[in-house]
Amino acid sequence: MVVARDDGGGWHVQPPHPWDEAGHMALLRDPADACVVAGLDVPLGVPRAWAHAAGVTAFRQVLAGMRDGRWPRFADPAPTTADIATGRPFYPRAPGGTSRADLVTGLGLAGPADLLRACDQAISGRAPAAAPLFWLVGAQQVGRAALSAWGEVVAPALAHDHVRMWPMDGRLPALACPGHVVLAECYPRAAYEWPLGLPRTGWSKRRQDDRRARAHQALEWCARHLPSVHPSPALRDVVDDGFGDGPDGEDGFDALMGALQMVAVMEGLLPDMPDGIDPARLAVEGWILGRPAG
Image (cartoon, rainbow, N blue to C red; front, top):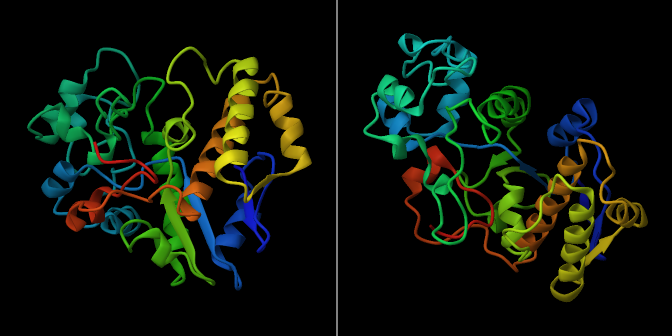
């Protein structure tokens, strides 16, 4: 994760560091007189078609169902097609001999598109579709991370009255106020283009030299468009090094890109979400911070 603090003199952005269970959860539990906006790189919402079948009208009901035993097998991935059910939607437990068509059939959905939320859909010529939440195969799968974050971070945080969830509880400018914590879904890959304008092809975050070049480009963009962003000397050192040569370098890179996108939203340079989205859909599916309409 990357922390950016606004102390009244601009956003001071620190280098990426590992999630600290005790320290960061304490900050979510007690922000004192600060406003904390926490961007999580996991889905905060479920597909509306599945929610309709499950009798769910709000994502909070899903979190409650995980806690109160309504769906005792919800977080237990189905090992076979026969095990797939509305109350056990994650599939498969292990790869091999599986297909998304099996998941569609097992959940009683009309087609593959019903596995996606509106904010997961492709944007023509700009962004591919995201991986379906319930499909657990492939490098882009997000289901296991979502289950972990929902159970270990989101649900415990929402147990406190001062914690809000964007966009279910309102637009970000209205939610972000002293003494409140706001949980929001972020997608660093989206930040590459909105607002940073990084090229869509010709580079890879898995390469140290590419991370170095694109992170410098992002900070140069901030110098032009977000002069309130002040990278710390330690962050500049990390960027100059390309986030290290280890396999976790891409995680630090993504954390920085997501943080810069969040600052752009907080500063009003980028809208938190498009206008006109059905509130009933938002209550179930949520939205990705900064993503335009499809």
